[in-house]
Image (cartoon, rainbow, N blue to C red):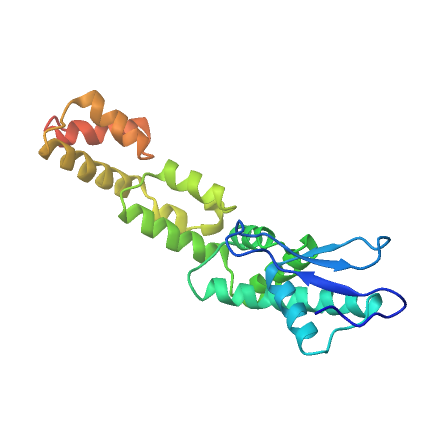
Length: 219
């Protein structure tokens, strides 16, 4: 169903076909060749289609533009709530997800800023949780730091906690434990152990000390 024609221009919404790639936008199309179509996030397209079906569609022009702008902000807010209810996000990750869904930059910036201001998003909290999780999984500091950077977060966000969560003694203990597992499984050659530990994000110095310790050669 298309919107009632006002001023000679009617409009409709084209929803992506089932099976379309994630993030495919809906399209607001007009029956006048002089009015360009407008891509909108799928959630916004579905709300507009509902308005059409209920006979409450705004007229093309300023009223439609205003309705779309309002829906963009509302749907982005709901998307943020949906995402953070599942897991924690960094500010950069959250912005990337909203952009992937097709929200414009100004809406993304506003929603991410408000999420940060309200404490829903907190990069320091995110970093601390991430570091604890990956340290338990046997990651070294360098690998953790690279993974955080890929999510737009620096270890500096941890402040003094960085030294506490990633102390050299703890790094060495984790590396020795990982190396010991490999030795017990029959993979106990020194150079191989050092390469393995470096690949897990431990510094060459810690990797070498841990490998020697696991092999019973001391530090």
